Image (cartoon, rainbow, N blue to C red; front, top):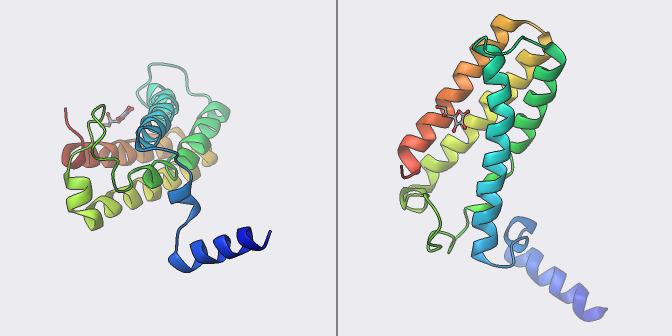
Length: 150
Ligand code: ASC
């Protein structure tokens, strides 16, 4: 027990966060970030179908999907840690680790836009949703252009 407390204190002192501790191996981090981004894209796509008039607008569904997108937009970033650039099955560009401030800026932008999307979906107004969808899609694309291989 004493040892566990000492370890906890050591980790806290070193600033080792849960984000670092949550992946057993780099491959898990890659799987996690791909999966979370994939699930996010599925929910985002359902909003896109409404925004583009491909399916009928349903305010409740838009809101549920936007809540999910905004929540998921927070989670992939902890999975881009050191050493996760070496895993073969990734389209992540080296620029992520070479320009961390720029990458963080892009990640923050997505979170800001998805929060706007969540608020827009809550209004039940299709025009507001379309506008926020388009802004969010722009932040997805800008980040992919800079940081994701084709
Ligand atoms: C999506 C999706 C993306 C973005 C991007 C926007 O629905 O899966 O990665 O939108 O295509 O340009």
